[in-house]
Image (tube, rainbow, N blue to C red; front, top):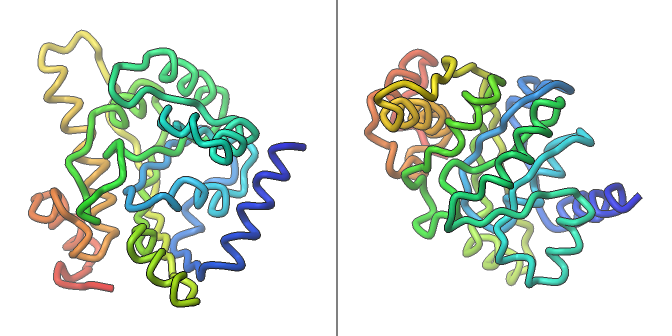
Length: 232
């Protein structure tokens, strides 16, 4: 009951105070294990997950600092989120996420690990690539724009609803991960770069940040016949 109430409140708030545009919703499987990897621009990104996903098995990793915020703690506890220590290797949180993922859940995370103060992609951490390869499940890249804290606050303070755009790419599979491989760090970086480049290719140019000039992004834009200078 708590889950349904929390999710209903989130949907109502987004419906009342934002305009949402979703592209690529058909790429989202209605069931089965999946990792959704998205960029992270603002505080609205986290609750947005529960508006975008119509599934009861969402797995979300939440920074431990929000445990001190009563409203945030109430929502996270009822939505069965997993508290994670951002500054240390939180193996307990990773084990919980993997167990629920292998049981058929959908894990939503930001490979960047934090909101981008520059409002564009930061260099990602290897956790997303590791989890995807370790679990052996597909990854769905998602690009979000319009959730920048600065933009949202400005729009709302002027009694305007901010426009939030969600663009989902096609699911893809990373190669199997061998923990005994000698160049472990290099392999994980390749996995992470692949995830981030797929997100970057879905974003307008000004949001691509660290990955703007990555050759893999240009390859994807060319394959999709999408001009690199396109913006939104």
